[in-house]
Image (tube, rainbow, N blue to C red; front, side, top):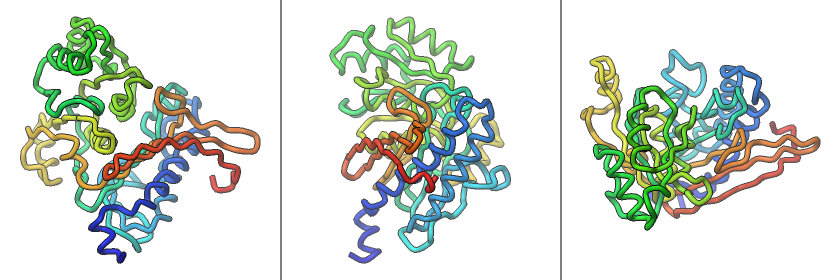
Length: 327
């Protein structure tokens, strides 16, 4: 199969393991600074490690979701080209350390995250807030509605799951802006798990409620994180709706420059991450879905999930790295 045929058929499945190496390197680098209270340092070492590993991949990669605009981020900025330049053209969304504060405080659910898709397949989202609602796989399409009251969405989910509303748990970022949302959810009788940071992890947790205890994600968070979460849900069959919060003329103008013509559009997961998508996340700190990096005297262990949309394959990879020099 030549390169053109391979691209037409989707991403090379060999990349599935290659992206795992990328998140493993970033996670190990960040984990060395867990609990040290220095968010910037932890983020920077994760960025450096992820960039170095990306540049070893046989791809023509363009970062569409990264560490910020070129003037704001010295590495892995939006628009940066990575890879050897000798492979398929791909879009890349990444967060070398999702949950910088979490890592600095050594709290649960810090991750190193990346998604790779065919060129032109990932939403080029500005760094603004996004309204989000997400549930895991196995439910009828259209079950959730971003404009419906929380009580309606939770009631519909409970009915589809065949349980009482009191057995539903919602994940919400613990922010003052969510006070009314939290009150509305609690009024239904459903439980809430508040998280301090890391809403990519929050959305991903809906993909495996039996393991994580999370049935639905609600609230506003970063739009770049929304694209990453959508990539994960594309691979598992979950549902997600998102709408950019473009509440100033400056934000609307920025979005227009990035190709967004309808500021009120509601995006589905398949709109934010189209085509064949690869996704990987490695735990930095212990969490509900992934264990954090463990440092032994003669080896390092990592825990990663690797997903692919075209095959709906979910790989859970627990690796023992005995060649410490590669880190």
